Image (cartoon, rainbow, N blue to C red; front, side, top):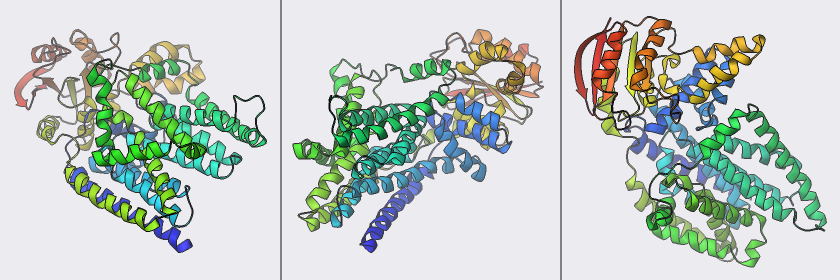
Length: 553
Protein backbone atom coordinates (compact mmCIF):
# COMPACT_ATOMS: atom_id res chain seq x y z
CA UNK A 1 0.00 0.00 0.00
CA UNK A 2 2.78 2.46 0.92
CA UNK A 3 4.69 1.63 -2.25
CA UNK A 4 1.56 2.19 -4.37
CA UNK A 5 0.92 5.56 -2.71
CA UNK A 6 4.55 6.63 -3.13
CA UNK A 7 4.48 5.46 -6.73
CA UNK A 8 1.46 7.66 -7.43
CA UNK A 9 3.18 10.72 -6.02
CA UNK A 10 6.30 10.02 -8.10
CA UNK A 11 4.25 9.56 -11.26
CA UNK A 12 2.47 12.88 -10.80
CA UNK A 13 5.66 14.69 -9.81
CA UNK A 14 7.59 13.28 -12.75
CA UNK A 15 4.83 14.01 -15.26
CA UNK A 16 4.28 17.55 -13.94
CA UNK A 17 8.02 18.31 -14.06
CA UNK A 18 8.18 16.94 -17.63
CA UNK A 19 5.32 19.23 -18.69
CA UNK A 20 6.94 22.19 -16.92
CA UNK A 21 10.26 21.46 -18.62
CA UNK A 22 8.57 21.35 -22.02
CA UNK A 23 6.87 24.68 -21.31
CA UNK A 24 10.19 26.15 -20.22
CA UNK A 25 11.95 25.11 -23.42
CA UNK A 26 9.14 25.88 -25.86
CA UNK A 27 7.54 28.94 -24.29
CA UNK A 28 9.57 30.61 -21.54
CA UNK A 29 13.13 30.61 -22.92
CA UNK A 30 12.25 31.88 -26.44
CA UNK A 31 9.64 34.31 -25.08
CA UNK A 32 9.37 38.00 -25.79
CA UNK A 33 9.34 40.85 -23.24
CA UNK A 34 6.71 41.02 -20.53
CA UNK A 35 3.15 41.86 -21.52
CA UNK A 36 1.36 44.69 -19.70
CA UNK A 37 0.29 42.91 -16.50
CA UNK A 38 3.42 40.76 -16.40
CA UNK A 39 5.63 43.83 -16.28
CA UNK A 40 3.80 45.22 -13.28
CA UNK A 41 3.82 41.91 -11.41
CA UNK A 42 7.58 41.55 -11.94
CA UNK A 43 8.29 45.16 -11.00
CA UNK A 44 6.35 44.94 -7.75
CA UNK A 45 8.38 41.86 -6.90
CA UNK A 46 11.54 43.84 -7.70
CA UNK A 47 10.30 46.59 -5.34
CA UNK A 48 9.86 44.08 -2.48
CA UNK A 49 13.24 42.50 -3.32
CA UNK A 50 14.92 45.92 -3.08
CA UNK A 51 13.33 46.50 0.33
CA UNK A 52 14.52 43.09 1.54
CA UNK A 53 18.02 43.68 0.18
CA UNK A 54 18.19 46.94 2.13
CA UNK A 55 16.81 45.30 5.28
CA UNK A 56 13.93 47.80 5.18
CA UNK A 57 11.07 45.90 6.83
CA UNK A 58 8.95 49.05 7.04
CA UNK A 59 9.42 49.42 3.30
CA UNK A 60 8.32 45.80 2.77
CA UNK A 61 5.16 46.42 4.79
CA UNK A 62 4.45 49.74 3.06
CA UNK A 63 5.05 48.43 -0.46
CA UNK A 64 2.97 45.33 0.28
CA UNK A 65 0.13 47.30 1.76
CA UNK A 66 -0.19 49.67 -1.20
CA UNK A 67 -0.69 46.82 -3.66
CA UNK A 68 -4.45 46.66 -4.13
CA UNK A 69 -5.41 46.00 -7.76
CA UNK A 70 -2.69 43.36 -7.91
CA UNK A 71 -2.42 42.05 -4.32
CA UNK A 72 1.01 41.42 -2.82
CA UNK A 73 1.39 37.66 -2.36
CA UNK A 74 2.83 37.17 -5.86
CA UNK A 75 5.48 39.80 -5.18
CA UNK A 76 6.39 38.03 -1.92
CA UNK A 77 6.87 34.75 -3.79
CA UNK A 78 8.93 36.24 -6.64
CA UNK A 79 11.09 38.65 -4.58
CA UNK A 80 13.38 35.86 -3.27
CA UNK A 81 13.79 34.61 -6.86
CA UNK A 82 14.98 38.08 -7.88
CA UNK A 83 17.31 38.29 -4.89
CA UNK A 84 18.89 34.97 -5.85
CA UNK A 85 18.83 35.19 -9.64
CA UNK A 86 18.73 38.89 -10.46
CA UNK A 87 16.38 40.61 -12.89
CA UNK A 88 15.81 37.59 -15.09
CA UNK A 89 12.63 37.53 -17.15
CA UNK A 90 12.95 33.78 -17.57
CA UNK A 91 13.34 33.10 -13.85
CA UNK A 92 10.34 35.26 -12.96
CA UNK A 93 8.18 33.46 -15.50
CA UNK A 94 9.41 30.12 -14.17
CA UNK A 95 7.59 30.81 -10.88
CA UNK A 96 4.39 29.95 -12.76
CA UNK A 97 5.89 26.59 -13.73
CA UNK A 98 6.73 25.85 -10.08
CA UNK A 99 3.15 26.74 -9.15
CA UNK A 100 1.91 24.41 -11.90
CA UNK A 101 3.82 21.46 -10.42
CA UNK A 102 2.65 22.34 -6.89
CA UNK A 103 -0.99 22.63 -8.00
CA UNK A 104 -0.88 19.29 -9.82
CA UNK A 105 0.41 17.62 -6.63
CA UNK A 106 -2.28 19.35 -4.55
CA UNK A 107 -5.04 18.13 -6.86
CA UNK A 108 -3.54 14.64 -6.78
CA UNK A 109 -3.78 14.73 -2.98
CA UNK A 110 -7.35 16.04 -3.12
CA UNK A 111 -8.37 13.50 -5.77
CA UNK A 112 -7.01 10.62 -3.68
CA UNK A 113 -9.51 11.47 -0.98
CA UNK A 114 -12.41 10.18 -3.09
CA UNK A 115 -11.41 6.55 -2.68
CA UNK A 116 -8.95 4.05 -1.26
CA UNK A 117 -6.39 1.72 -2.81
CA UNK A 118 -6.54 1.73 -6.61
CA UNK A 119 -9.57 4.02 -6.57
CA UNK A 120 -7.61 6.66 -4.63
CA UNK A 121 -4.63 6.35 -6.96
CA UNK A 122 -6.72 6.70 -10.12
CA UNK A 123 -8.86 9.52 -8.70
CA UNK A 124 -5.74 11.53 -7.91
CA UNK A 125 -4.04 10.75 -11.22
CA UNK A 126 -7.15 11.77 -13.14
CA UNK A 127 -7.51 15.10 -11.33
CA UNK A 128 -3.86 15.93 -11.91
CA UNK A 129 -4.03 14.87 -15.59
CA UNK A 130 -7.09 17.07 -16.20
CA UNK A 131 -5.21 20.08 -14.79
CA UNK A 132 -2.09 19.41 -16.87
CA UNK A 133 -4.23 18.98 -19.98
CA UNK A 134 -5.83 22.42 -19.67
CA UNK A 135 -4.64 24.77 -22.40
CA UNK A 136 -5.62 27.73 -20.23
CA UNK A 137 -3.50 26.55 -17.32
CA UNK A 138 -0.50 25.79 -19.53
CA UNK A 139 -0.72 29.21 -21.23
CA UNK A 140 -0.83 31.10 -17.92
CA UNK A 141 1.89 28.93 -16.34
CA UNK A 142 4.47 30.38 -18.76
CA UNK A 143 3.70 33.99 -17.87
CA UNK A 144 4.50 36.21 -14.91
CA UNK A 145 0.85 36.29 -13.93
CA UNK A 146 -1.03 35.91 -10.66
CA UNK A 147 -3.23 33.06 -11.88
CA UNK A 148 -1.07 29.98 -11.23
CA UNK A 149 0.05 30.86 -7.68
CA UNK A 150 -3.55 31.85 -6.90
CA UNK A 151 -4.78 28.58 -8.40
CA UNK A 152 -2.42 26.69 -6.09
CA UNK A 153 -3.90 28.34 -3.00
CA UNK A 154 -7.45 27.82 -4.26
CA UNK A 155 -6.69 24.12 -4.87
CA UNK A 156 -5.15 23.97 -1.38
CA UNK A 157 -8.41 25.25 0.05
CA UNK A 158 -10.37 22.56 -1.80
CA UNK A 159 -7.93 19.90 -0.55
CA UNK A 160 -8.09 21.13 3.04
CA UNK A 161 -11.88 21.20 3.00
CA UNK A 162 -11.81 17.61 1.74
CA UNK A 163 -9.55 16.61 4.62
CA UNK A 164 -11.96 18.20 7.08
CA UNK A 165 -14.92 16.41 5.52
CA UNK A 166 -13.17 13.05 5.62
CA UNK A 167 -12.37 13.62 9.31
CA UNK A 168 -16.05 14.10 10.06
CA UNK A 169 -15.85 17.89 10.08
CA UNK A 170 -14.49 18.18 13.61
CA UNK A 171 -10.79 18.95 13.06
CA UNK A 172 -10.28 22.39 14.62
CA UNK A 173 -6.65 23.01 13.53
CA UNK A 174 -7.63 22.22 9.94
CA UNK A 175 -10.48 24.75 10.15
CA UNK A 176 -8.00 27.42 11.27
CA UNK A 177 -5.78 26.50 8.34
CA UNK A 178 -8.76 26.74 5.98
CA UNK A 179 -9.45 30.29 7.13
CA UNK A 180 -5.81 31.19 6.54
CA UNK A 181 -5.86 29.62 3.05
CA UNK A 182 -8.92 31.69 2.08
CA UNK A 183 -7.00 34.86 2.99
CA UNK A 184 -3.85 33.68 1.19
CA UNK A 185 -5.95 33.02 -1.91
CA UNK A 186 -7.38 36.54 -1.60
CA UNK A 187 -3.87 38.00 -1.31
CA UNK A 188 -2.82 36.02 -4.37
CA UNK A 189 -5.75 37.14 -6.51
CA UNK A 190 -8.70 38.93 -4.97
CA UNK A 191 -11.55 37.47 -7.00
CA UNK A 192 -10.23 33.93 -6.40
CA UNK A 193 -10.29 34.55 -2.65
CA UNK A 194 -13.81 35.99 -2.79
CA UNK A 195 -14.98 33.02 -4.87
CA UNK A 196 -13.38 30.43 -2.56
CA UNK A 197 -14.68 32.19 0.55
CA UNK A 198 -18.25 32.35 -0.78
CA UNK A 199 -18.20 28.72 -1.92
CA UNK A 200 -16.88 27.51 1.43
CA UNK A 201 -19.35 29.75 3.23
CA UNK A 202 -22.19 28.13 1.28
CA UNK A 203 -20.81 24.67 2.06
CA UNK A 204 -20.60 25.59 5.75
CA UNK A 205 -24.22 26.74 5.66
CA UNK A 206 -25.28 23.27 4.48
CA UNK A 207 -22.83 21.18 6.53
CA UNK A 208 -23.58 23.05 9.74
CA UNK A 209 -27.34 22.96 9.12
CA UNK A 210 -27.47 26.65 9.95
CA UNK A 211 -30.97 27.01 8.49
CA UNK A 212 -32.41 24.29 10.77
CA UNK A 213 -33.79 25.11 14.20
CA UNK A 214 -32.64 21.76 15.58
CA UNK A 215 -29.33 20.79 14.00
CA UNK A 216 -27.90 17.30 14.44
CA UNK A 217 -25.11 16.67 16.98
CA UNK A 218 -22.62 16.32 14.09
CA UNK A 219 -23.72 19.69 12.69
CA UNK A 220 -23.20 21.32 16.09
CA UNK A 221 -19.65 20.00 16.24
CA UNK A 222 -19.02 21.24 12.71
CA UNK A 223 -20.33 24.67 13.61
CA UNK A 224 -17.57 25.18 16.17
CA UNK A 225 -14.90 24.53 13.56
CA UNK A 226 -16.70 26.67 10.99
CA UNK A 227 -16.82 29.59 13.40
CA UNK A 228 -13.10 29.13 13.99
CA UNK A 229 -12.43 29.26 10.24
CA UNK A 230 -14.60 32.37 9.90
CA UNK A 231 -12.85 33.98 12.87
CA UNK A 232 -9.36 33.36 11.45
CA UNK A 233 -10.46 34.71 8.06
CA UNK A 234 -11.98 37.86 9.55
CA UNK A 235 -9.02 38.46 11.87
CA UNK A 236 -6.48 38.27 9.04
CA UNK A 237 -8.63 40.42 6.77
CA UNK A 238 -8.99 42.98 9.58
CA UNK A 239 -5.21 43.35 9.63
CA UNK A 240 -5.14 43.77 5.86
CA UNK A 241 -7.96 46.33 5.89
CA UNK A 242 -6.79 48.19 8.99
CA UNK A 243 -6.51 51.37 6.90
CA UNK A 244 -10.22 52.09 6.16
CA UNK A 245 -9.51 53.68 2.77
CA UNK A 246 -8.14 50.32 1.68
CA UNK A 247 -11.65 48.86 1.75
CA UNK A 248 -12.80 51.53 -0.71
CA UNK A 249 -9.77 50.90 -2.93
CA UNK A 250 -10.40 47.15 -2.91
CA UNK A 251 -14.06 47.55 -3.83
CA UNK A 252 -13.02 49.85 -6.67
CA UNK A 253 -10.49 47.28 -7.89
CA UNK A 254 -13.17 44.56 -7.89
CA UNK A 255 -15.54 46.75 -9.89
CA UNK A 256 -16.28 45.42 -13.36
CA UNK A 257 -14.86 47.55 -16.15
CA UNK A 258 -16.52 46.93 -19.53
CA UNK A 259 -14.15 44.90 -21.70
CA UNK A 260 -14.91 42.69 -24.67
CA UNK A 261 -18.43 42.04 -25.98
CA UNK A 262 -21.39 43.66 -24.25
CA UNK A 263 -22.63 41.40 -21.46
CA UNK A 264 -26.25 41.70 -22.64
CA UNK A 265 -25.46 40.78 -26.26
CA UNK A 266 -25.51 37.24 -27.66
CA UNK A 267 -21.71 37.33 -28.05
CA UNK A 268 -21.42 38.49 -24.45
CA UNK A 269 -23.66 35.72 -23.11
CA UNK A 270 -21.80 33.08 -25.13
CA UNK A 271 -18.32 34.47 -24.46
CA UNK A 272 -17.45 32.27 -21.48
CA UNK A 273 -19.21 29.10 -22.69
CA UNK A 274 -17.08 29.40 -25.83
CA UNK A 275 -13.95 29.29 -23.67
CA UNK A 276 -14.71 25.80 -22.35
CA UNK A 277 -12.60 24.17 -25.07
CA UNK A 278 -9.62 26.36 -24.14
CA UNK A 279 -10.16 25.69 -20.45
CA UNK A 280 -10.42 21.93 -20.86
CA UNK A 281 -7.72 21.76 -23.55
CA UNK A 282 -10.00 20.24 -26.20
CA UNK A 283 -13.72 20.26 -26.84
CA UNK A 284 -14.02 16.53 -26.32
CA UNK A 285 -12.45 16.94 -22.87
CA UNK A 286 -14.96 19.73 -22.19
CA UNK A 287 -17.60 17.08 -22.90
CA UNK A 288 -16.00 14.83 -20.27
CA UNK A 289 -16.18 17.75 -17.83
CA UNK A 290 -19.91 18.14 -18.46
CA UNK A 291 -20.53 14.41 -18.09
CA UNK A 292 -18.75 14.49 -14.71
CA UNK A 293 -20.85 17.50 -13.76
CA UNK A 294 -24.05 15.66 -14.65
CA UNK A 295 -22.96 12.56 -12.69
CA UNK A 296 -22.19 14.74 -9.65
CA UNK A 297 -25.79 15.97 -9.57
CA UNK A 298 -27.12 12.56 -8.57
CA UNK A 299 -28.66 12.48 -5.07
CA UNK A 300 -26.00 10.04 -3.84
CA UNK A 301 -23.23 12.39 -5.00
CA UNK A 302 -24.87 15.46 -3.49
CA UNK A 303 -24.60 13.88 -0.05
CA UNK A 304 -20.81 14.28 -0.32
CA UNK A 305 -19.85 17.70 1.05
CA UNK A 306 -16.72 17.81 -1.11
CA UNK A 307 -18.76 17.51 -4.30
CA UNK A 308 -21.24 20.09 -3.02
CA UNK A 309 -18.38 22.53 -2.52
CA UNK A 310 -17.11 21.96 -6.07
CA UNK A 311 -20.61 22.44 -7.48
CA UNK A 312 -21.08 25.63 -5.46
CA UNK A 313 -17.78 26.99 -6.76
CA UNK A 314 -18.70 26.15 -10.37
CA UNK A 315 -22.15 27.74 -10.05
CA UNK A 316 -20.81 30.90 -8.38
CA UNK A 317 -18.02 31.30 -10.93
CA UNK A 318 -20.48 30.78 -13.78
CA UNK A 319 -22.95 33.34 -12.42
CA UNK A 320 -20.25 35.94 -11.72
CA UNK A 321 -18.74 35.43 -15.18
CA UNK A 322 -22.06 35.77 -16.99
CA UNK A 323 -23.04 38.92 -15.06
CA UNK A 324 -19.62 40.54 -15.32
CA UNK A 325 -19.11 43.34 -17.84
CA UNK A 326 -15.47 42.30 -18.09
CA UNK A 327 -15.13 39.48 -20.62
CA UNK A 328 -11.58 38.13 -20.35
CA UNK A 329 -11.03 34.40 -20.88
CA UNK A 330 -8.59 33.87 -18.00
CA UNK A 331 -11.09 35.15 -15.44
CA UNK A 332 -12.81 31.75 -15.28
CA UNK A 333 -9.70 29.60 -14.75
CA UNK A 334 -10.87 28.67 -11.19
CA UNK A 335 -13.24 26.31 -12.98
CA UNK A 336 -10.28 24.09 -13.95
CA UNK A 337 -9.39 22.65 -10.50
CA UNK A 338 -13.08 22.30 -9.66
CA UNK A 339 -13.82 20.30 -12.79
CA UNK A 340 -10.54 18.36 -12.41
CA UNK A 341 -11.70 17.13 -9.01
CA UNK A 342 -15.20 16.36 -10.27
CA UNK A 343 -13.71 14.21 -13.04
CA UNK A 344 -11.30 12.66 -10.52
CA UNK A 345 -14.17 11.85 -8.14
CA UNK A 346 -16.15 10.11 -10.87
CA UNK A 347 -13.05 8.23 -12.03
CA UNK A 348 -12.47 7.08 -8.47
CA UNK A 349 -16.07 5.82 -8.25
CA UNK A 350 -15.73 3.91 -11.52
CA UNK A 351 -12.33 2.51 -10.51
CA UNK A 352 -13.97 0.59 -7.67
CA UNK A 353 -15.67 -1.52 -10.34
CA UNK A 354 -13.38 -1.26 -13.39
CA UNK A 355 -9.90 -0.11 -12.29
CA UNK A 356 -8.18 -1.28 -15.47
CA UNK A 357 -10.70 0.52 -17.65
CA UNK A 358 -10.13 3.77 -15.74
CA UNK A 359 -6.35 3.37 -15.93
CA UNK A 360 -6.57 2.81 -19.70
CA UNK A 361 -8.83 5.87 -20.01
CA UNK A 362 -6.39 8.06 -18.04
CA UNK A 363 -3.48 6.96 -20.24
CA UNK A 364 -5.56 7.59 -23.36
CA UNK A 365 -6.54 11.06 -22.12
CA UNK A 366 -2.91 11.97 -21.45
CA UNK A 367 -1.80 10.81 -24.91
CA UNK A 368 -4.64 12.38 -26.88
CA UNK A 369 -4.58 15.62 -24.91
CA UNK A 370 -0.82 15.82 -25.35
CA UNK A 371 -1.12 15.39 -29.12
CA UNK A 372 -3.75 18.16 -29.29
CA UNK A 373 -2.50 20.63 -26.69
CA UNK A 374 1.30 20.54 -26.52
CA UNK A 375 1.99 21.42 -30.20
CA UNK A 376 -0.08 24.58 -29.70
CA UNK A 377 2.36 25.94 -27.11
CA UNK A 378 3.94 29.17 -28.32
CA UNK A 379 6.54 31.56 -26.86
CA UNK A 380 5.09 33.72 -24.09
CA UNK A 381 4.90 37.49 -24.40
CA UNK A 382 5.22 39.37 -27.69
CA UNK A 383 8.59 38.72 -29.41
CA UNK A 384 7.93 41.62 -31.83
CA UNK A 385 8.43 44.09 -28.95
CA UNK A 386 12.01 42.95 -28.32
CA UNK A 387 13.72 45.21 -30.88
CA UNK A 388 11.85 48.47 -30.00
CA UNK A 389 12.52 47.86 -26.30
CA UNK A 390 16.20 47.14 -26.83
CA UNK A 391 16.54 50.33 -28.90
CA UNK A 392 14.95 52.38 -26.12
CA UNK A 393 17.03 50.76 -23.36
CA UNK A 394 20.27 51.26 -25.33
CA UNK A 395 19.62 55.01 -25.45
CA UNK A 396 19.30 55.34 -21.66
CA UNK A 397 22.36 56.22 -19.61
CA UNK A 398 23.05 56.00 -15.90
CA UNK A 399 21.83 59.54 -15.20
CA UNK A 400 18.93 59.91 -17.62
CA UNK A 401 15.43 61.20 -17.07
CA UNK A 402 13.12 59.16 -19.29
CA UNK A 403 9.71 60.55 -20.22
CA UNK A 404 7.32 57.94 -21.60
CA UNK A 405 3.61 57.40 -22.16
CA UNK A 406 1.11 54.67 -21.24
CA UNK A 407 0.16 54.41 -24.93
CA UNK A 408 3.56 52.92 -25.76
CA UNK A 409 3.33 49.43 -27.37
CA UNK A 410 4.73 48.00 -24.11
CA UNK A 411 3.67 48.83 -20.58
CA UNK A 412 5.59 51.39 -18.50
CA UNK A 413 6.47 48.60 -16.06
CA UNK A 414 7.90 46.49 -18.89
CA UNK A 415 10.19 49.34 -19.93
CA UNK A 416 11.24 49.88 -16.31
CA UNK A 417 11.93 46.15 -15.93
CA UNK A 418 14.16 46.17 -19.02
CA UNK A 419 16.01 49.22 -17.66
CA UNK A 420 16.50 47.34 -14.38
CA UNK A 421 17.91 44.40 -16.33
CA UNK A 422 20.21 46.80 -18.18
CA UNK A 423 21.59 48.10 -14.88
CA UNK A 424 20.76 51.76 -15.55
CA UNK A 425 17.66 52.07 -13.34
CA UNK A 426 17.10 51.51 -9.63
CA UNK A 427 13.67 50.50 -8.38
CA UNK A 428 13.39 53.86 -6.61
CA UNK A 429 13.51 55.55 -10.01
CA UNK A 430 10.73 53.44 -11.56
CA UNK A 431 7.93 55.85 -12.39
CA UNK A 432 5.57 53.05 -13.39
CA UNK A 433 5.01 52.26 -9.69
CA UNK A 434 3.22 55.58 -9.26
CA UNK A 435 -0.15 54.92 -7.57
CA UNK A 436 -3.11 57.18 -6.94
CA UNK A 437 -3.53 55.62 -3.49
CA UNK A 438 0.04 56.53 -2.57
CA UNK A 439 -0.45 60.12 -3.72
CA UNK A 440 -3.58 60.46 -1.64
CA UNK A 441 -1.93 58.78 1.35
CA UNK A 442 1.05 61.15 1.12
CA UNK A 443 -1.09 64.26 0.86
CA UNK A 444 -4.02 63.32 3.09
CA UNK A 445 -2.87 60.89 5.78
CA UNK A 446 0.85 61.41 6.35
CA UNK A 447 0.60 65.07 7.43
CA UNK A 448 -1.87 64.06 10.18
CA UNK A 449 0.26 61.25 11.63
CA UNK A 450 2.05 61.93 14.95
CA UNK A 451 5.75 62.59 14.44
CA UNK A 452 7.21 59.35 15.91
CA UNK A 453 5.16 57.39 13.37
CA UNK A 454 5.08 59.90 10.52
CA UNK A 455 8.83 60.49 10.26
CA UNK A 456 9.87 56.98 9.10
CA UNK A 457 6.83 56.68 6.84
CA UNK A 458 7.29 60.10 5.26
CA UNK A 459 10.43 59.08 3.39
CA UNK A 460 8.74 56.19 1.55
CA UNK A 461 6.50 58.13 -0.87
CA UNK A 462 9.49 60.43 -1.56
CA UNK A 463 11.87 57.75 -2.89
CA UNK A 464 11.33 58.65 -6.54
CA UNK A 465 13.40 59.62 -8.59
CA UNK A 466 16.04 57.71 -6.60
CA UNK A 467 19.49 58.77 -5.44
CA UNK A 468 21.30 57.60 -8.57
CA UNK A 469 20.75 55.96 -11.94
CA UNK A 470 18.04 56.71 -14.45
CA UNK A 471 14.48 57.68 -13.54
CA UNK A 472 11.25 57.32 -15.51
CA UNK A 473 8.15 59.46 -15.76
CA UNK A 474 4.99 58.49 -17.67
CA UNK A 475 2.15 60.50 -19.15
CA UNK A 476 -1.11 58.84 -18.08
CA UNK A 477 -0.01 57.58 -14.66
CA UNK A 478 -1.26 56.87 -12.08
CA UNK A 479 -3.97 54.75 -13.71
CA UNK A 480 -7.68 55.15 -12.95
CA UNK A 481 -7.23 58.52 -11.29
CA UNK A 482 -8.15 61.31 -13.76
CA UNK A 483 -7.60 63.96 -11.09
CA UNK A 484 -4.01 62.81 -10.50
CA UNK A 485 -2.81 61.39 -13.83
CA UNK A 486 0.05 63.18 -15.52
CA UNK A 487 -0.99 64.97 -18.70
CA UNK A 488 1.00 66.87 -21.31
CA UNK A 489 0.08 70.17 -19.63
CA UNK A 490 1.59 68.95 -16.37
CA UNK A 491 4.89 67.75 -17.83
CA UNK A 492 6.89 70.96 -17.12
CA UNK A 493 5.99 70.81 -13.42
CA UNK A 494 6.67 67.04 -13.16
CA UNK A 495 10.04 67.39 -14.91
CA UNK A 496 10.92 70.35 -12.69
CA UNK A 497 10.07 68.25 -9.63
CA UNK A 498 12.41 65.47 -10.79
CA UNK A 499 15.30 67.77 -11.69
CA UNK A 500 14.79 69.73 -8.46
CA UNK A 501 15.38 66.61 -6.37
CA UNK A 502 18.56 65.54 -8.18
CA UNK A 503 20.63 66.37 -11.25
CA UNK A 504 20.30 64.48 -14.55
CA UNK A 505 22.93 64.60 -17.29
CA UNK A 506 20.61 63.50 -20.06
CA UNK A 507 16.93 63.12 -20.90
CA UNK A 508 15.11 60.78 -23.24
CA UNK A 509 11.65 61.21 -24.74
CA UNK A 510 9.99 57.93 -25.79
CA UNK A 511 6.77 58.87 -27.51
CA UNK A 512 4.28 56.63 -29.32
CA UNK A 513 3.65 57.62 -32.93
CA UNK A 514 -0.05 57.53 -32.10
CA UNK A 515 -1.42 58.24 -28.60
CA UNK A 516 -5.23 57.87 -28.64
CA UNK A 517 -5.68 58.70 -24.97
CA UNK A 518 -3.23 61.61 -24.89
CA UNK A 519 -3.09 63.12 -28.40
CA UNK A 520 -1.55 66.34 -27.09
CA UNK A 521 1.47 64.47 -25.66
CA UNK A 522 3.30 64.69 -28.98
CA UNK A 523 7.05 64.50 -29.57
CA UNK A 524 7.14 68.28 -29.88
CA UNK A 525 5.25 68.77 -26.60
CA UNK A 526 7.46 66.39 -24.61
CA UNK A 527 10.69 67.74 -26.09
CA UNK A 528 9.58 71.33 -25.40
CA UNK A 529 8.88 70.45 -21.75
CA UNK A 530 12.37 68.95 -21.42
CA UNK A 531 13.96 71.93 -23.12
CA UNK A 532 12.21 74.16 -20.60
CA UNK A 533 14.10 72.25 -17.89
CA UNK A 534 17.46 73.01 -19.52
CA UNK A 535 17.94 70.03 -21.87
CA UNK A 536 19.05 70.47 -25.50
CA UNK A 537 17.31 68.37 -28.14
CA UNK A 538 19.47 66.00 -30.16
CA UNK A 539 18.81 63.41 -32.84
CA UNK A 540 15.65 61.34 -32.92
CA UNK A 541 15.11 57.82 -34.19
CA UNK A 542 12.14 55.62 -34.90
CA UNK A 543 11.95 52.38 -32.91
CA UNK A 544 8.94 50.33 -33.97
CA UNK A 545 5.78 52.31 -33.17
CA UNK A 546 7.72 54.86 -31.07
CA UNK A 547 9.96 57.87 -31.60
CA UNK A 548 12.99 58.19 -29.31
CA UNK A 549 14.57 61.63 -28.85
CA UNK A 550 17.80 62.04 -26.87
CA UNK A 551 18.53 65.34 -25.10
CA UNK A 552 21.66 66.59 -23.35
CA UNK A 553 22.28 69.15 -20.66
